[in-house]
Length: 456
Image (cartoon, rainbow, N blue to C red):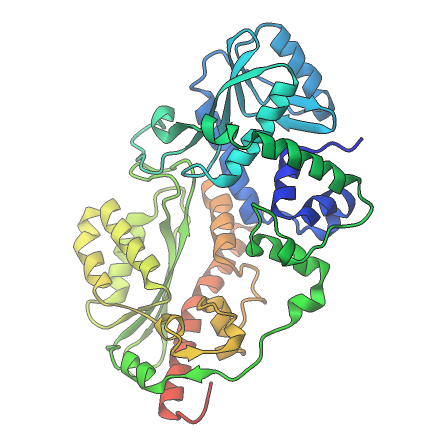
């Protein structure tokens, strides 16, 4: 009999075909990316700070997995009051709960640890599935609670678990899903037993499904569909673009940050999920006819990069001229954060913010709108259309979350020692392309204004 876990059940609520593929053709499901795995790993680290608040808890080890349910029963029979990672089974259904706390004979409180900064809809369906299995095993579930990350916490010295975490009671919300869960677990069983895959179309998305979640799986199923690109001519508002570009003042400083971020703060003054710049690239154009200049910074020590980076940036970026970014809210928030970490830099970072302009504006405002952008103003969508001669695909590191993950692994966690210098070289290439891409897009926009009859 094929088991259906709580994650399997959640997949069925995202898209019925997702559960079927997981059980019958898992090769069609894209593997977990390194960046997503890093998020999972941080979630496991967070669990320790939730568990430490429950004295005397007994943890059920995962290995060997097939004996977990039996070992859970042995621990419960021994009279343990708090159990971490207990496994429960009923017919083909199984779940591993985060924390079960006994509050009376066969009466428990059920806790779920989540690495999010609040309770999400899928958490409630997850807990409803667990509560169903606990009841089928003869337990009364009194309270159901979610422990999540308090992103207002600021680290000072050792981590304080009670301040890093928040707990909210969701008993009522989960109880409202009891009948739904019984019915939909039956549906999940039928999906697994079926020899044919449910309709994989987007129209068949489930109650927890989103098009963006299902898209990578769908494109694995139908690669020819995934390769189809929109067609059509760009729409260009030359007057708006010309007015926008006229607001730029030389020297032009094209700036891009890469950041580090962790769930559990690594440095004093840092909050959960707070992004601290650890790298920048700066392409500089002093005048219209000047040669393009490049400066950069990459932090390579296991320390807070904020003050060293901001001090170097202030030297490199000067006190006059436009600071050109893509999606300026991000760079400006980084500058503000750097000023908070380094009070001696606060005034200068604020002055930099007052000079920032956003090169994304013509694309976000649809002054330059091309169907090939697929409705997105991301530089990753715009660049291949505006500047097809430039590409991220040939780089070893070609995504921001990938850059963050490999920097954390190499610098903070001291991994990749044998390829450390190559990692740093790859990070520099990636960040430099971000700012060089902005320079090239800016130049192409200027050309479109000077030759309005010629589309880019």
